[in-house]
Length: 381
Image (cartoon, rainbow, N blue to C red; front, side):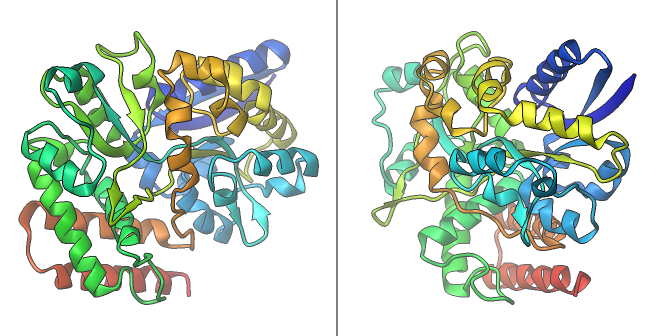
């Protein structure tokens, strides 16, 4: 009996499609069993892969960890093992930059089995009840937030992602300079804008991640709208939560829609895997177009293959989630992936979060973020 182990994150979207595909793979290949494990969403975002790659064969990972994984030679380069035609199809059918986000220094380290970025979501019933006009601009959003109808995830990691989004909207792309996270003038304005919104969203936003935000929105009888949180199609599926969400794109800022920060998940294989041939075959199975728009998505997954996002049956089953949000994902900004970025991301997230809670000097926050950037780069110099 060949036994493989895998780890993903602890939500229906992350866990159940891996259980379903592993079960089906074992039914087809009776000599193989795949034991699935899960970790928190926070650990998915920031836990080092060194330990996980030593313990598991199949890893569902976030793309900013790719540089560190490559530096430590933790993952199999998939381009050396999977066919060129298969990888070409994955690239051609990527949702936004999902597939390319796992390509680093000439090698493909994961398959984009899941795609996501911050999107907007709202309760159509409460929007109608409160006689709300959906916001089209940042100014509209603030006006709606002043009515107490808006929530937003503002834990540390999401606050940093939203800061990146605001910096891009101010035409100050993050990391444009090697020693600066965001140019000071734009960074100051972006921090002030983000804090203004968060303070209007009421108690709890600073403690809620996207999962808890979507759950709060589906359970609420007052809060009707979330302007940006990493999308979960599950909450747009009838029967999954108390109320079904409607989703869409992001509001405009200075005349242009926001570009959110790409998320999603990739399936990678540890170099310590004792049965790489079987692990590679399973990974190709999970990422294949047929599985992506059938078993993977039907089991609660959020596919990475573009054909699934365009599928009319899947859109009918998810209140048009995929069609409504695809343009936002296609436009999403991709974070850097150098070795040490995860440590920077963790440090910078905490700095932004503390600023949102306590206020203070924006210049000091940006300076400390630049210090964290320098430290992360020196670690692997």
